[in-house]
Length: 393
Image (cartoon, rainbow, N blue to C red):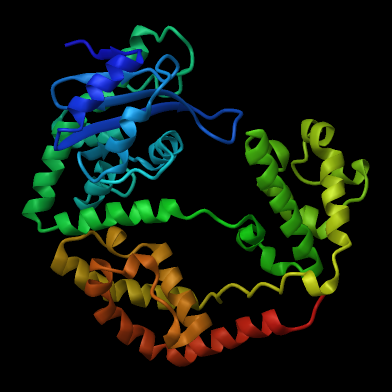
């Protein structure tokens, strides 16, 4: 059966009314993000198990009938590897979608890997092979080619049977509550929007910079984020990440000096050079009382031994629950837990991932390991505080 093309407002309103009554729908998007900060929506695909609807946002001028479907718990929306789709749909709907079920998360719980792609998931679970040669084609071009149309329709045609299959696997293993909780956790994490004034903390090796250099780095990142959003440009078009540390350390004051900074391309120098120099100059005039504090040093190499001890303790839970260890306790979970204890001790709030089922299952076996390492954690914390409190600059 051929996909149904939706190219006008009336047709979308009619289809949306019918879809809203479904228990679940399959959902996917195609978009372009080559030279823009924000993704440009090129196509919305929805499947209901009977039809595949291809909604053309370049022709449909009112997409609002989709908003209540996206922002309500029901119908449940089934997607695969959906983080970028959620960003696109959030911008379109003006709110974060809800009721999301990600089959990539489901396949991870079933032991098929943390980031299995849609094509591989179909092969492993349904024995279905679909082409993937149109994934990087131009989705803003019109008319869409027959290959693009077929590719887009297949993206939602097999999502309902894939979800039925993995749902049964999760149900039989008692993992459905864990899966649905992690889908909600994913949405919560996507809700986080970093403060541009704090982005300097995440720059590689920023802890090596003095407070005055951190002030320059902070100003550069605030400027880049504001300009990228206002001008709808990729951040790397303004300043590449690989240039940040050296810009903060060397603080060039001329185009010639700026030109030798790593990855400051001739195009960046020509278009943004004067602005970058102005930002650096302004940052250099900041008074000492406005400089950021030094950043704490990273955990010592010995922390890897503690990480491994925590992981070993978690394998007991992995064995009893059947949840793969790489899903149960990811590296980022361990790092967040340990850093919290290092910096704040017993008063540290639990990382978000440990709220709910993961904390209930893991904390009883992780807490004894952390308690045994308490003196070590305190020593690491004292060392990090000395780095922050020592006068420098």
